[in-house]
Image (cartoon, rainbow, N blue to C red; front, side):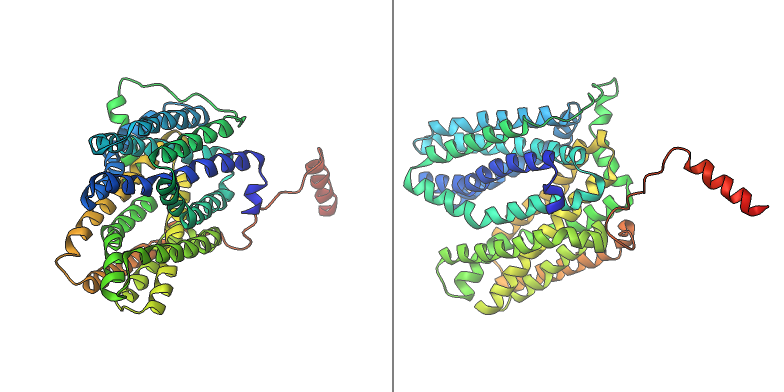
Length: 423
């Protein structure tokens, strides 16, 4: 990661993303707390998360729009627009204004999809192919690190100052990201405009995912695991309450432990990609979630801490493996549509599983659901592991070979020497 961070262009992008990711980590959970405070309803608070996820249905359209513009200007403009979309939160005062929070959450979900798609293309443009895993690993390490402090900081800001502080932090973070990334100076070619067959271009990302063997296998396996991974969003509360007999606030302790595991996973993920390949790294990430879920079926705090650490460790492996695979196996002109489509394919099953988990935890023993989650994710990991040959890592040294410089005329001298020896 030090190698990629020495590159001035990526270092500038990294600093801009640090500002926007900090705002994001502070804002999202605090929005749900805000709705809970205004309405007193757990269900309405949880609906805030679904409002963020719902725009994933527009992924083909968003990806098509992203691919029609140069990456850096679009990314800067999208950050500015996101800051503008967050600003209506300053108007929220009473329960009657909750619809503003939902509207902002949905619009933020749309902008997040566009920013993610544009970011994938921008990283591919700034970073050599052999350093993509390091770039994605650096960003995932920061994202996981922010999970340690972001939600707590957001809740503290809201408790101390109120919702206006959340809006101010969000606006400031995305404006800072736009300003910093705007300083990048990269040579970009203008993508082609919309042609007469533009309706067909909307589905180009999904067609590429379906037609490329490694991407197809990766998305199918990860989507299978996502169908049950979302259960844990509700199961962890039952584990703390019914299993450990502790207050719900103890979930915050386990989230912190998970963040520590995520930091380690983010640091290890580039090395995993070099040794296992992208699909192999994704398989390891999904598979590691299995024993973590199985261990949580046994209510013991010592076992639970290890399990949550392992679950946190697995998440960056899955994201770095998948993102690097998409960037390496997708033509630059399609990268926005493919990245947006992949986000929708993964987030759709995950959103369904979050909702299903909330319903099932009230009807079934949480331990059975943890056993089901562990079993399915192990099967999904095994399905992906069998396809690791599709992205076999290069043998030998992981450092790129640099050819020695050759002086003009060397070829002629060597050829003449060989002719002399042949006489």
